[in-house]
Length: 347
Image 1 (tube, helix red, strand yellow):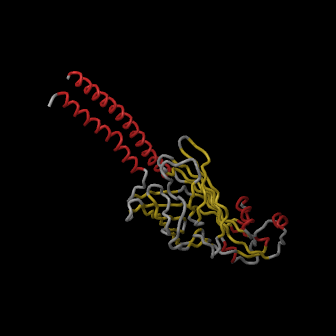
Image 2 (tube, helix red, strand yellow; image 1 turned 135 degrees about the vertical axis):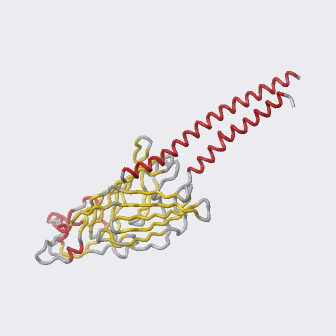
Image 3 (cartoon, one colour; image 1 turned 90 degrees about the horizontal axis):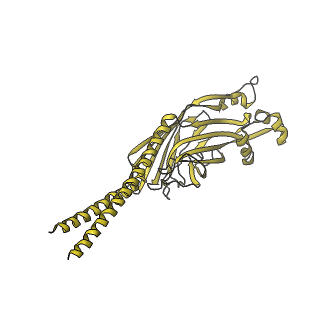
């Protein structure tokens, strides 16, 4: 074997190796990073918040000498929400099971959803369930959904998140509503939505339930509201609890990681859906059963940001590796061509 032929073989081997390191390996690695990792657990925790809570039992058991207005029985409770999400494998390597356990005050719920690992969207089958135990703020009781068909994202966005609206699942209402891209902060995307008031009466298809309250209109409405709504102060009204929430998420688009979450949840009393819309916006003092603002704590934000940055850093390193490998491969191929031309001339 001549020296030229040995060099040509060496150059071919080098070109193949550079193709593997600059194309095959980066594609495989980046492809795997776009999927949910199984057998992992992620923790989310909110800062302690002062929730406004109405002591309904105390109002219902009041005496004739006690304050008759519901607002007199409003107190505050310090609440912290803790969630742990575990990703489990399934019999289909393209799918995974998300098992989430959440505690909020005396309430806790289990959330299970079968999702596609590539998009993190739930599968198009009734493979989701939620089960709530305990009482939230002494007002709301939970239930069990059984298996149901779920739509919308919850704990993570797809890799390569786009500047568009995504369906987002709210566990309290059991509804998916669009969460809209609204802005960009540095290299993060901001998404926001307002979930319209949802009734929480005992027969409602929701996770939380609370019984309607009946009493004199003056117990719930101010004198100005009574005049505006055409009510009589001494007439009896029955009000249904309605839940509403506005939510803002900060998402790192390359990884799909949610790196920050802010929620404003409120439960108001209203005679109708139309009245609930206005009450959820104005939050009148006499008809608020529950109100809380929650934000992720610093440790959670830091951990999710680091997880997102790991993906971004790896993508950048793979991009550099691919560029260098392609440049070297070009040099190797050019050298091989030069050697072939020289060999032919020598003949």
